[in-house]
Length: 289
Image (cartoon, rainbow, N blue to C red; front, side, top):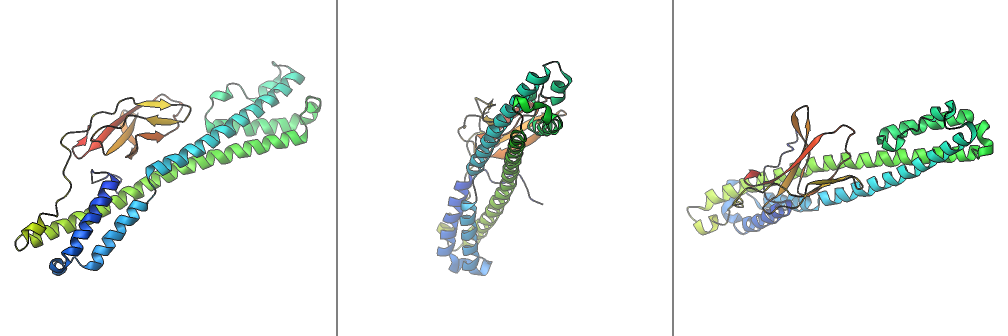
């Protein structure tokens, strides 16, 4: 099972740089280390793993993809809501605001509905308009106009699904990136320990090179300016000194549930309708601040 908790506290780029430096030292000392199981082939494998980890999509890349898809979804939502209001104008013009027909459109407070509710109600509205379309020809509701509404609904649904998929992919990529980083750190740490022990008696100067990164002198402070921007659907907070990663939590049923862990000081997230409490905290080699 994938461990979704980082076991190393330096940044991903720092881990790559450290692993590359260790590989360079191991190659220089390989003549003394082969009998202890550290071969040139294994060193090359570790170096290649570090390169693959460096090329793995960063969280900033995932955030960019999310923001692009969320923006596209919001644009299509606006177009759909405009189209639905235009249909409402036609129905009111024909039957009146207090009519059964207007009530059956089910558009009351649709601007405040969730994304899924908007999609469902829009399709229900379309189905109802199909039934009464012949009565609204004079108000401009032609079969072509109704077909255009269906296209708008489909475009919104597609954009909504795409936005949801990139968010899921981000979580998958985050787990994969943490797993890759943990594996890289474990192997690098193991090779450092082996090399240090193998060289400490006959080549102490070389042994002293294999030292793991030092811990930070103090815990990371609590992030400041923690806000949620409803226009971008994004949590953000200040980057904190000595912090190597952050954890965002939501309180559900009196339990703290992690919804984000990573190096970025922002996270794309759509707030549910019910009011919940959210907290962010910084992390470094000393643990959480």
